[in-house]
Image (cartoon, rainbow, N blue to C red; front, side, top):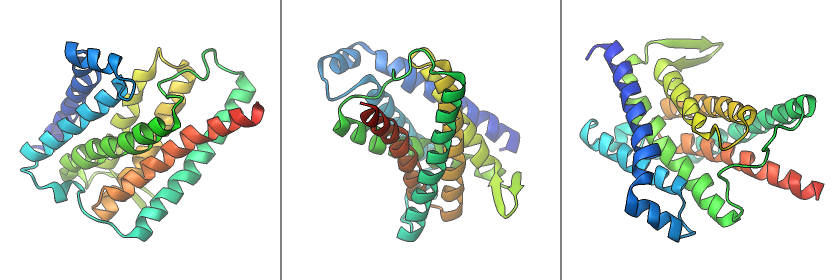
Length: 239
């Protein structure tokens, strides 16, 4: 398979996944009725579960079921903790920059709105765990691995090499978050897209360096913890 075709096919698979998991499956009659009548599962949970099924099917059929090649392997605790710590520090810095931006330009209309539940336990399960694990399985597990033949292309930042698969998967992961347009203020969505891109770069780097998805999941959890907990703590302090 020609290398340019791999990139094109990866983009097509990503776009079809967005269409299926983000638009079509959650709107199926019985699924929509089920989520509307059960508080413990939301439309966003259906999106995540759909993404997981799509990712596993892609790995099984396209990857011939070689799950270990797609990151389903252990990693050293030291590396996992390092990835998580780096993610927490960087996401905290990004959050502070966003706060400074809001202080300078003013609070955007609709601030505070979004898909986050008021139920802390549900947020921990849905955002910290479910979203972090499933999104990494698709983006760093399947998509980045699928583009592995393009690893020789990339950019070098001092001693850190970022391959094209890492960059491309991070870009697609960031762009996915434009689905929040109309749900949250545009300026906040742009921040989330940039934040997600940087998350993808760090997660993709650790995924490629270790061969495991676990450090990437640790990065994702770190970003989600900071992104959800710091605003809630600040609101409590202001009250």
